[in-house]
Amino acid sequence: MIEIENVSVAVRGTTILEHCSATLRAGTVTHLVGDNGSGKTTLIRAIAGIQRYSGSIRFDGADVARVRSRLYVCFDDAPVFPYLSGYENVRMLLGRTLSRRAIASVAPSLADDVLLRLPARKLSHGQRKRVHLVAALASRAPYLMFDEALNGVDAPTVSEVATALESIATGATVLLTGHHADAYAALSTRRVDIVDGRLIATDDVADGITA
Amino acid sequence: MNAIAATPSTTSIGFGIAAATRSEIRLLWRGFVLPVVLIVCALFAVGNVVNQTTAVRADYALVQHTRAEYRANGMDFQADLAKPAKVVTQGDEQTISNLARYDYDTMASAIAALSPASTVSEVLKYFGFIFFPVLFFLLGLWMSTVQRRYHLEKVTLTRAGPFVTVGARQLALLVSAAVVVIVVTVVDAASRAIATGILSSQLPFANYAPLSPAAIHSPLAEWGIALLVIAFFGAAGIAVGSLVGVFAIPAILFLIWDLVVPFLGPNDPRNWFVFLGHSAFDFGSGFQLAPAIPVAATIALLGTVGGSVVLVVLGYLLSRLRNPLAT
Image (cartoon, rainbow over all chains, first blue to last red; front, side, top):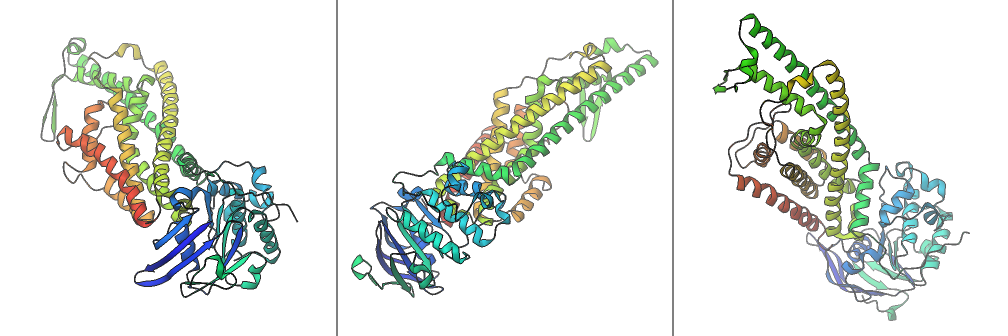
């Protein structure tokens, strides 16, 4: 469970997030919907501990410093090291020495052995996104954040991602951001809108989200 | 549709300092930085031995020339060898009182320096003062900027935090240094063994044993100074990289400062290292270290050790400043 309490972010005098509060429960996939510049990525960065904020964000009662190795953030730009293969990038992203078999078997429909063997410099944005999705799944992290999860991902992959999220959502706390509510409907179990830096619960007010 | 096996873990899933260090080393290796460094250093090690071999041949020829001149002038070469040589320097001019002994000592010293037994000392002084400052500053700078160049730092910082991230870079630097020193030492020793074997079949080495006692040197001091050079300049590279975030400009500025700009005074860090170098190493033959501006030994030692510690802490603080909530 991730508890976001009264979180505000201001950068150089501009307010980006304003008194955001939400409780993201384990076993749920929350879709954060908002326009460009509404604060989705900033909220993810604040949760990840790389954005200064006021307020409180707790992971099952703990500070981010105590859970950072159990938190995986799949950033929108899907950064990879170009000289490493997909396999090696997964290992580097996770800081773990996983066998090729272990990585390839996580989600072969998302990234198979052929794709994971390629040097990352030869991968398209969508393929790099797949490598990050595989890393996220292989991490078995209980806290998963996906910024613009479906950007650059082709239509068939969306259903693969949905299956993946369904399988991990039984125990993990998952937060997705993205613009297109329809595309994400199959992926998420609940939806939260973010408008001008304020969170608005559209389908589950009683779940602890306050505007 | 394929089944996906991914059950959330309740335990820590890695990215301690050991894992982060492995990642840094993997980047150095697969980014071709470490292989290139090793190849270049190995080539320079071979080049250094070739230069020393040439120096031995030239010194041998000079001794034979001096011996012939003694004979032509009716002087006793052997008698002069028994007396010490005196060198008086006045301004730019050097006066040598006993050319026979001076040339002989120079050659004996060159032979001793070329010997495989001198490998470690020669490697540490040749690489420690010429290459290591540049090499490890650039390695530190590369490590602290490459992840930002590819937008990977936010991933690393999220998963590992700046303490582990910066600590891993320091450790990766030391591991790289160990690999570089080992590879260079092996290549250097092999080159010396080959060179000595070839030369000893051509020149009567046995007839040119040193007449003066060998200069006393402490292997501990030599290793300590080489380690300080690596720690100081590596930490400086990491700190500068954490501050500016780009590689090319600070790399060029450092090269200009290190290779072109003369010492800016006794407390220029380069002067501290050169001063300590003259105290620990014998520069009797082969590579000659630039003269040091006089400075108190305690200041040089405290400056280099304290400076290394300050730069390590600075690297961490600068990384934290750029990522304020990471812990």
